[in-house]
Length: 395
Image 1: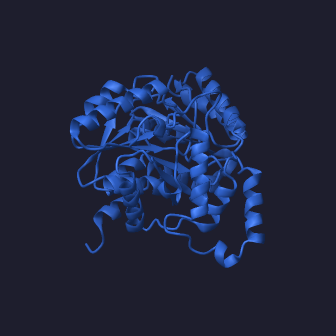
Image 2: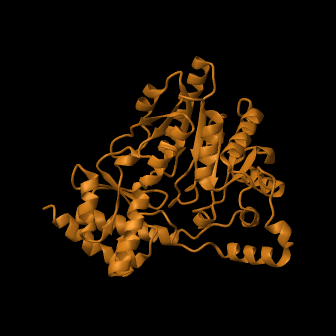
C-alpha cells in the first residue's frame, strides 16, 4: 500500500456522531427535515450575539483589507493575545501574560497541539469517562496511550479512588472536560481539589510534571448558579484549551486559544513546545478576521436561555415517560440510559421512529446515549410522541 494505513482507518470510518449526522441529512432529503429528529451534532441553534455581526461589519468597513485578511504572527496577533490575557486575569485572577497565549483553530486544534507538546512516545494520558470520542484519536496521534477513568455511578462525577489507581510513573497528562460532553455534568470543586492534590503528590513522587489539560468549550454554558472551577487556580501545571464555538455560537469559524499557566514548571519551555507542536501540525496563524472579532467581542455571550428551556423540556418529558436521564448542569447534552444493554442496537431501533441519537460506547460508557438538545424547541416538542413510541416498543 502506498498510503498511510493509520490515516486510511481514520478517514474511511466516520465518528459515530458524524455518521449519524450524515444519515440525518440523507433521511431529511427523503422524508422532509421536519419529520427527522436529529439530536446527533453539538451544533449551536442559538444565533451569535449581536456584537459579533456588528464587529464583522466594523472590521470590513474600517480595516485595511490586506491587513485584515493577511497573516498574523504564527501564535496569533499580539493585540488579540493581550486582550485574552487581560480577560483571563480579570475573570479568574490569574496573572496571565500574552506570551503564554496561542491562538488556534478551535478546541480540537488546541487539544492536538497540547498533547503533541507534552507527550513523548508511549506516555499515558488519563481521561474521564464519559469523554469526547476524538480524545482517543488526538492522544494516539500524539504517540500517547489513552487510559480511561470510570466515573461514579449515577452522578458521573470523577471517581477519585479509581483515578488515583490509574496513575503510574508513565502518566504524563490528564484531560478534563467540564461542563462535560456528553453527560452535561459539571465536576464539583471538591472533586477538582481532590484530583489536584493527588497530581501534586504524584509529581513529587515521580519527579516529573504531570500536565492537566482543561478542555473548556462549554465553560459559559451552565444553568443556575453552578460553579465551574478555573483549573489554573488549583494546579500550576495546567493548560487551558478554549473555544469560542459555543460561547459565541461560532463553531464553523474554528477559533479558540491555548493558555499556558504562567506558574507552570518550565512555563516558557512548555509554551515554546506548544508553538513547536502548532508549527509541526500546521496549526499556525489562526483565522485572522476571527481572531480580531473574538477579541473585539470579548465578554459577549450567547443567550443560553433557549438551551435551558430545551434542557428542561427534554429532561422532564423523557423522565416522565420513564427514561433514566442524568440531569445536566451545563453544556447542551442529555445523557440517557439505553433501554437495552447494547446502546448501538437501541439507537438503531430509535431510527425506526426517526430519532437520531448517539450511542456512547465510544465515549467510554456503555449502555448510554447522548441527545444534543441544541436544536429548535419545536424539534423537541415534535419528537416526544416518537420517544413515547420507542419506550412503548420495549414493553
